Length: 206
Image 1 (cartoon, rainbow, N blue to C red):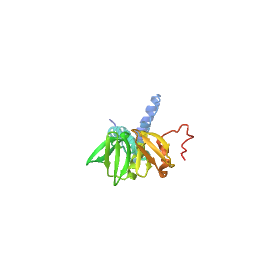
Image 2 (cartoon, one colour):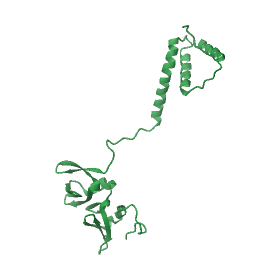
Image 3 (spheres, one colour):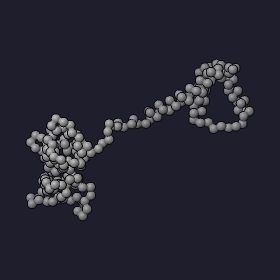
């Protein structure tokens, strides 16, 4: 095949365009090829361009254009968020008797301070934990646990009744009948026991 210089290729293209009146819409991909071709023609100093070189332009240029678009998108778009290994759920892990147990937080009724340890009251029994009540509160707040006393956390889902006591404090009764005192320090936490308070003018415990 006869080699064409950059100028010759341009003139040849013009003659072909005049001979063929059909108009074809350029796609972004075609535009990238043309721009890349023009740049290479200038870079080559209008040296002869072989059919092999032209084929290279038409094949490689689209790939380079795609790579550039991908690189630009990566610079503009924010990095994807880190994904947890497993979806967050109601399961919690506790260490009891030297073993890691996985339990459902929805089955935990309350957690109480017992000396230097915590006693976790589960629907199936009790577990002794080596943890502070403050740290347990931070970890279990999102699971629906409410601090009502400096030494007690209750699962709001198990609270069945709230009533004032004779000394101006409040008592909470959980499922199963056990009662806990609510101290003044944590009185306002009672608002988290329910999502809605009907017939009470909102949460207005005095």
